[in-house]
Image 1 (cartoon, one colour):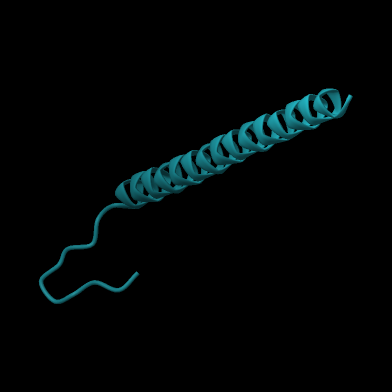
Image 2 (cartoon, one colour):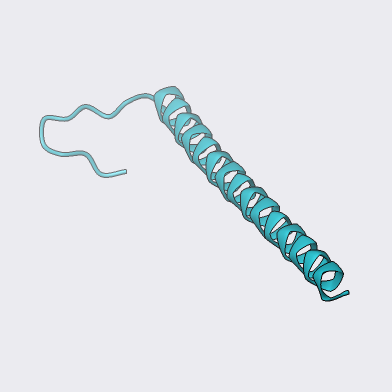
Length: 67
């Protein structure tokens, strides 16, 4: 690790703490992103299913009107 002039190197223990904190931040960010994509996908699927159901209802109504 390179230190700027006047900057004191931290202990190895501090470095490990920073690495662990960084890993935790990255894992949390990835988890949130996956959850968001999953939630958006489920919402899109619900809209698609709802639209399909509405179309089916419309077809049934039109069939009955033809009689």
